[in-house]
Amino acid sequence: MVATGQPIARLANPTLKLDVLTREAQIAGQLGDVSGQDLGIERNRLDRAGQIAQANYDLIKARRELGIRQQLHDQGFVSDAGVKSFAEETAYQEKRVAQLQSGGAAEARITATQAARLADTRGRLSGNLAAVRAGLDALTVRAPTGGRLTNFTIQPGQTLKPGDPAGQIDSEGSWKLEADVDEFYLGRVAVGQRAIADGARLTVSKVLPAVKDGRFRVELTFDSAARVRLNRGQTLDIRITLGSTAPALVAPVGGWLEAGSGSSAFVLDADGRHARRRVVKVGRRNPEQVEILSGLSSGERITTSNTSSVKGDILNLR
Image (cartoon, rainbow, N blue to C red):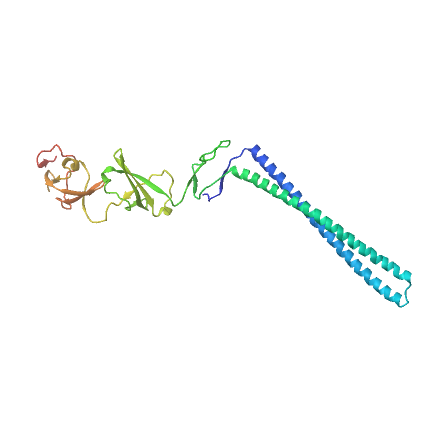
């Protein structure tokens, strides 16, 4: 059984498949390099942000220390030389912060350009990878519908063009039966009539009236095909119900019908040595039996062989 879209064959020679897989690995490696560069850019950005944050913190500390020393200097506790070193440290930290911020702005512009190029490269590589994978996927024949895979006869190395059949899938539950019926029943078989075959119930879905070799074709659909194990091409014995079921007197089909066109029959006497012609009227028939509408009673015996050569109304039996 296969499901829709499930792979049922991979049509590829080893060399072609190896080339496709090699190309796929190369593109995947290049995409990995691009991702590594993206990671490096992000790491540098975080490092720069950390440096600026540290410089700002150091500047805050330097200014706080300078403020304390300046107050002590104003109160006469610290000399000018004691204040000068803290003033120089503060100036240094201010210059450091300015340089880091300036460098960060320039680096951000360069990083933005590089990130855009990496994004473009990633897009092109992703497109190439998708094309390579699509090429590999195109070598795989997938089931167009769910069902039972049958008649799958492709061979290694076989070349298939688009549209060539690679196999056959039989849809479970969608079986159709075709039957050839004797032309005698052409006017009695109609769409909608019921039939039965090996325990499965069917319905006549189409009647093709064209007669060939004394038969016409009928198509029937299964009402309960799930209960029967079916295979394409399988032959089933089928019986079509041509009318409603009702009690009837029947006689076996034989040469006697052709002899008298079904208008008379030779009925055996009680002694079984003579048979006398009697007018009868027949109705429905099938290949085995014919319905007797009048002229015979239940239990009476008739001669079923061809009696067309008998001219009289009494037949002597030996």
